[in-house]
Length: 190
Image 1 (cartoon, helix red, strand yellow):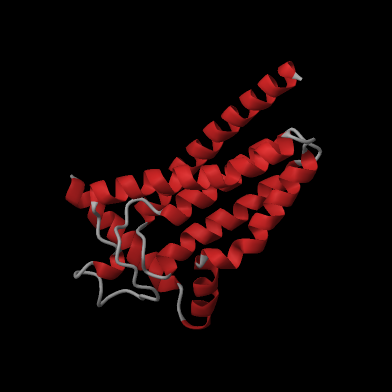
Image 2: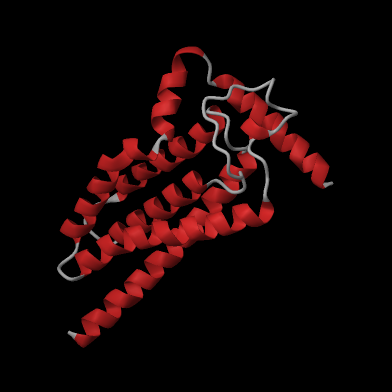
């Protein structure tokens, strides 16, 4: 049964990976690099700082790198435990897929997917109670695009992306719960 799941995952990967051809290669290479999203993180920090009174704004801003650290630590622990080869390192796929990047570490689950969904979920849920409105859900365009870029550049399977998304959603949600518990405690002591 596991072999069947892996085969389906590889087939879906081949199909999605094959869609990103020609002039879109540059776009997906740009999207997939975290440093190209630096201004978005600055924007997140700005929104968190401006949406809350001090010291809550500082706590919200400090939570973002903490969420990233926790998500990356858990991701690396699982990747090194599972040791699933990335598509770009899988001998049965290398000749039939488009490979734009060649990282050497393991594939399951996608750290890009997990971190981007964790941060976005934390920011969206934290800002949900402010006057930001429903437009903040548009922030999810970033992690969806960012996560799928990993398939298009040939370094993650769809299952890696899906599990990374779920882990990120869960970690972002739980981090926001902890954040609000801290805020409530802070307000009661003030």
